[in-house]
Length: 169
Ligand code: NI
Image 1 (cartoon, rainbow, N blue to C red):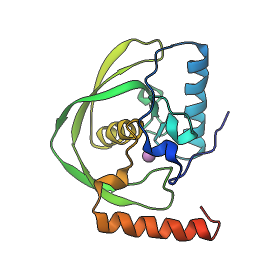
Image 2: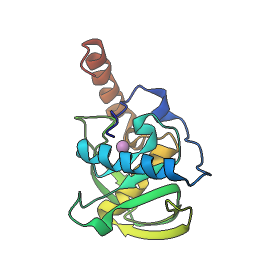
Image 3: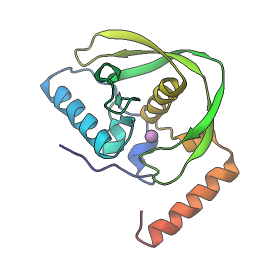
């Protein structure tokens, strides 16, 4: 089932999500739905709060269906190691049609649970490192615009307020 993507302004995006403790069929179904919703929205990552569910779950596929092995399910993820710095243009399905350069660690290692609850670690660089940081941020109620200058952030917020007023957000 494809869920609509929650947009900036909805408080669910800015509060820390709840830890997952039950690894059952319902969770597997939710993860299938998240991949489906992410692909439908043409994204390479999606966190559960972005479909209005405040739980620590994210899905990532930086190859966008090219490589089935690249599909990643991250439950209760934590970044445990960061290295280097890299600045690149970044966007978010919850802030459509905006992009900004964001400086992030170039290489990160994440520790997370899979859909059976098994703990694993994964190291990624470049786009994968960026996605792992972006999605983990979502689960902490943090959006990429919190990493840009206040000036640029306020400009985006002002434009969004106009879109909201015009009924276009
Ligand atoms: Ni996002």
